Image (cartoon, rainbow, N blue to C red; front, side, top):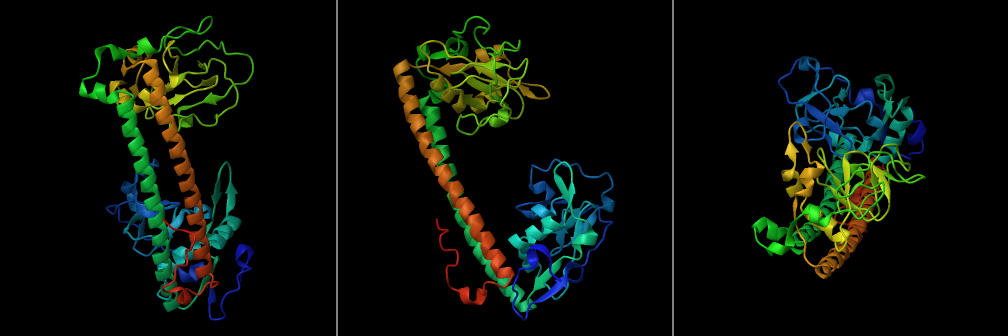
Length: 419
């Protein structure tokens, strides 16, 4: 009965194989438009649609045709099933008619089925049986999915395995959450320090030495000549140097004032030119106020504006101050249908400009903190990958009978994943 990725499973003798359709038949209950819409996410499973802000798909006009989902039902997003776009619902609601809703029978524990279907071997098999849909999706037809072999122990053993995996995965998730919160707290501390050290706190309180409080135009008078305009500039005349240059969008700017790998490693005619040492600011849209420091010549789209520090002004200090003032920049921006800050408005933005010696001291302090943050972030990402690997290995072993959960009661089976 087994094929593909499932054919190598050496199941315990008392476990049985059954087709998905006989374990969790497909149901097509509809006519309840008053129920809350649900969504299926790759990592979160089935959740209320209004609990997430990143679902931009439009609801259909006739919700009476949407499928009813009851607690314990399994919901499959047929275009994302192969990626893990499935899960057992804890909620009553409705989903698009394009989804599959399956209702487990009395001999099946829905939590066990959830872990089984999201195990490594089953995700591999779901990928294998899915049909390629260019440019970037796979379709899993019901006629194929319904035949998926489901490996099931007796019901009480299913429940015991599900209880064990609930406890162990919750423990791993808690450790990951604690590490994430630790990283976030360190980042928040550095952000608060940047506000103080760069002088933004003086401006916010309405204090500070008057001679140190200037408009941005005083700090960003360009020293470029020739084809590079003075003051705040965005070269839109195509006068870039010969050869390919990195081309950036706001999405390339990370959380710590660096600009990531270029989206396109080529210059585009008419794109703004960003000289080395520029401070790049996003001037429009939802990412308005994002700041990066460029230590190389680059180009970018029209959402980015580059300012060149005046002689005697540290570009890194200027970048740090504007980074610390992101929310203030957003509030400074004009707003009609979308937020936008033009060059004239940006020139008048108030900044705190101490002596060059003080600027350099601030930069050394904050830059050293960022090195530490990146080390902590890298360590967290390694920890997260390890935790994900351990979680998946544990789930796969437990639901395929390769690991006896009864022998693990009272033991730490996630050794190597610790706070």
